[in-house]
Image (cartoon, rainbow, N blue to C red):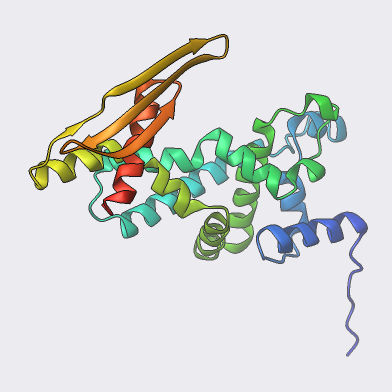
Length: 235
């Protein structure tokens, strides 16, 4: 029996290398992933009148990532309310985070767009990342995609991102109430200059300074002070 193997062209070879490096997967459905990396501007240039951009895959990938994270949060945070889980999920999928991850894995170099590099908007990187997840779902199915995406997000600080989203001030308030302690957040200083505001606030538990926070607003400085206090008190 004679077997015939199709030679992989340079574009497919580069794509395969990217998928293995970024997601640790392989594929033969190259067209799906090429489409995921094709912005509407390039799609119109290459295929006039044909909807062959990454927009539909982006829509699909966005829904798949939401589902994967909802499942993860439901399993790993049984004490969290629906509102708390929604807030945690939004931190992971917020545009700035997806843009950062998309840039870090090299999407900028592979994205097809007829815009010029100076006009490449950061959100296009996050959109392409979502489209790649949509392509992966079409290629691998939900279960394989769920495993791959979770491992991918964990490698890109999923757990750290979720931990940072926890409201440390609320955690500290709950702890002091439970343990019948007192808690105050005195403003130690407030500096205003051409760069903006800078607050310094202490987290004081039973008269003892347990945390110090600085930030452009009282809220951000309090959260930083509360986080430090939570770590010190091992809450």
